[in-house]
Length: 306
Length: 327
Image 1 (tube, rainbow over the protein chains, first blue to last red):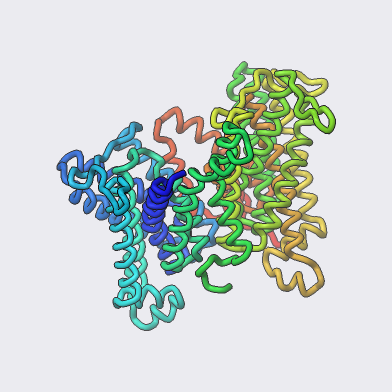
Image 2: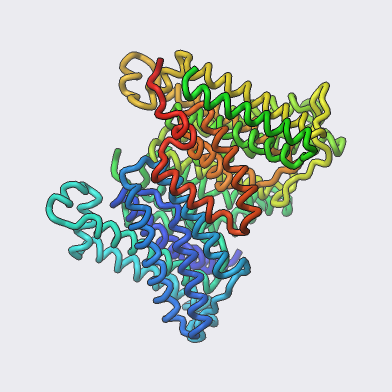
């Protein structure tokens, strides 16, 4: 277990965490502002990845693919908000869960009908492929490093948007008291569509960025969706800061657990049994973490006190 | 008989009629479909007890469905390989006897539900949905990595387990077992609803602080409801595994939790036979739409959306009108 390996894995964990943040930020905004549980957020991630793969395949431009992915996800999000989600704001959580579950079925099968069942591939752009040498002589893929930087940049931009702009003020006000905001003359339904489209665009961006290091396939959104839910529950629903902290915690726990738990168990178990126990515990570890957080802070680390 | 009573009777008689027709017409596959629907209905009756009566939106009932499945899988696996389940401190052999399997499934799931419920009930609302989902995922990943019992591939059981005095390999007889269990559980649930406990639970869902004021413990009522609910769903899981003679981690997946919830909501939340109607409709749609199109999930999704948006109260709510207030 060398220092190089540890640093590499920490970077991998950061990269996974930052991408999770892009998903979780949208989810937490949508929940915080509209009070809606959106299970279909993973479908928007999938749409982003598929559109990016299709556009990159047709034009060869990665930047164009990213823009198309964000636009497609945002448009899909806006359509869904206007057609379906809008009717659910006043509904019970149960109805929201079911309706957005129905949207998952529609999106998943719709994508399968359009793109077929086989995975697509999205290549990393040439300028960003290949390793880069970090201080200390560590070789690390440039693209993943760019993902970390890009994700943190988006996080900073989102933070500024929420804290410094007029839209941000309206969003924060909407979280606190939507009726008062509406009474003050803000077009609340337009604001809701905007927030939903913004969240969708972030999910689409995450899908496209991650699509270049994993295969683009049907159902790729749901595992990420569940992780993103864990993130916002740990961070506290509605809090962007919580989403960032939660995402990094989950990303690091998931990545480091998969590497170090089997090693840890090898200290006092036979190797094959240790690998198995370690692997099963590591995939359970983030859920255990979430359960522990909820037990001590039932509304998450940065959530509003009930 | 109330209108809901008539709907319930028609539903249950309809089940028997379909199975009997299929038996005499020589259509064993239709019997299998009816059995599948009865088992799903049982699982959903379990969830409905926590969700409808207790207001506990659990997105993790696949945990109990899976525990039931693995109780069957593990016991039958040891029986078919003639290996003991455990040797220390005393030898326990596997078994192929259904009632023992059911009992194991129910007790194990009740214990799991007790632990999960104790922890989860500290939260409420959306956090409760999420923490139950997280427990579901924990069990899912545990099952995947549990290589002693098949890991990701699951376990195949070659011959369906037996029930004393019956030949479970005959489709109609296995259907009979599942249907009788479903009816027995429905009877139990309807009794529970009208019992002092059921009334307290109902009140605990609506106005917990008033229940507390009269000196009762709403949290404990919810916990008991969660345990009963999990045990019922586990029984369904054991039957489902026996129907397919196969268990796999899919039984623990969050899609399974979602489907069980769909049965409840399609049929009508908090209605006694809502889950029965929901599961029957789901299985019928799965069969017919699946024949029509490879992409039948699109139609299922659209139908679900329509029901959530325009038909709150589900099928039973549509047929029988709004639920009566308590008698």
